[in-house]
Image 1 (cartoon, rainbow, N blue to C red):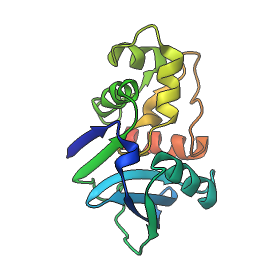
Image 2 (image 1 turned 45 degrees about the vertical axis):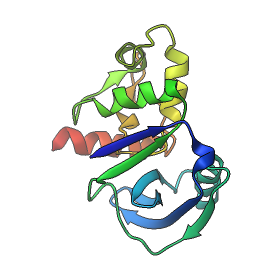
Image 3 (image 1 turned 135 degrees about the vertical axis):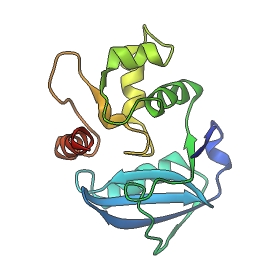
Image 4 (image 1 turned 180 degrees about the horizontal axis):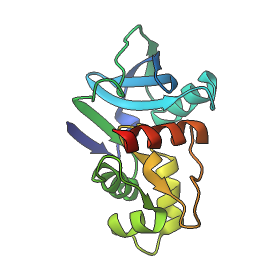
Length: 167
């Protein structure tokens, strides 16, 4: 998989998006050309909120609804574009380096990202991950125990973790 990190969100001009079914529920996916740039589940957020978050991510883009049915869960994307700050890039790189089926705490992720003393900011970056599942933010658990929160709902997080554990 080719990964491009950018801080230039305002330079993205055209984004295509679609809604598709996955084993975990409906997903909004978006592309900048051939680059997957956004993927999130909609049932907890709603379609409207998920689309609004996408539009805020690329504020100067024109958005086009398509029938494109590529599912990043079923078929790993060949190219992804991660738009955010350099700090968030550090966090998302650390997430991408996690082995399949593994978990870690926010503190462990902060250390892995090179920001050991910025646990809260790291947690915020996890929550702002624009490409759900591909950038595996669901693998981060609170040090106090339990499953913790997930922007697409704890039921989906639990299902993703169970699927990875049994694979």
